[in-house]
Structure formats: structure tokens, C-alpha cells
Length: 101
Image 1 (cartoon, rainbow, N blue to C red):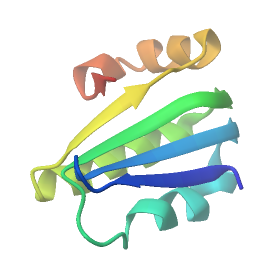
Image 2 (image 1 turned 180 degrees about the vertical axis):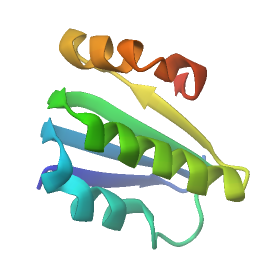
Image 3 (image 1 turned 30 degrees about the vertical axis):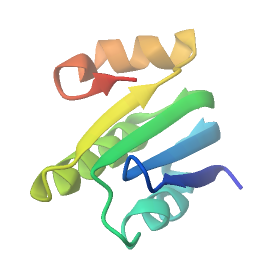
Image 4 (image 1 turned 45 degrees about the vertical axis):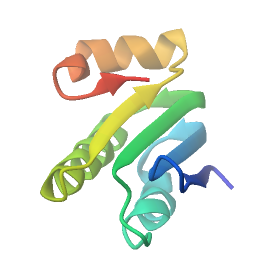
């Protein structure tokens, strides 16, 4: 599965592990992994180590996650991006909106 969710109850942290191309084809998997998760996480970490590339739809999915997290005062961090993915995130100035983990 291209998106795996890992829950840490001690930290109330949901880690979303993305693999392969992070694009519109992953929309349902990505959103489904966090949108209805109970209990509500206090922290989200999007682990991009396995992501080979991302496109504009992936950037939109990350922004949507951030927007929804802010409604519950949760935090969102991006972690372990490969150089190609890190360049795309930097080009979109995502360091303004997301912490690094």
C-alpha cells in the first residue's frame, strides 16, 4: 500500500508513510489514512522517505491535511524527504507552513 499509517498512543502522533509517486492517484489512500482516524491525533508526521516524486496534487493534499489539523490545534511535520522531493517542497515554500521532523 502506498500510504501506511502508524499510531503512537503515547505521543498521540499519527505518522503517514508515503511510498512511490505522491500524486493524485494516492488521494483516496492518503485522505483515508488520516481523515477518520480516532482518537484525534495531536501531531501528524508525513514520512516522505519512500516518496520518489510529488506533484501539485500532493502539495494540495498536504495543505488540506494542515488546514484540517489546525482546526483541532494539531501540528503537522514533514520528514525524511529525498532530495528531489525536498526541492519541490522548497520551490513551493512549504517550510513556511510545515515543521521538519
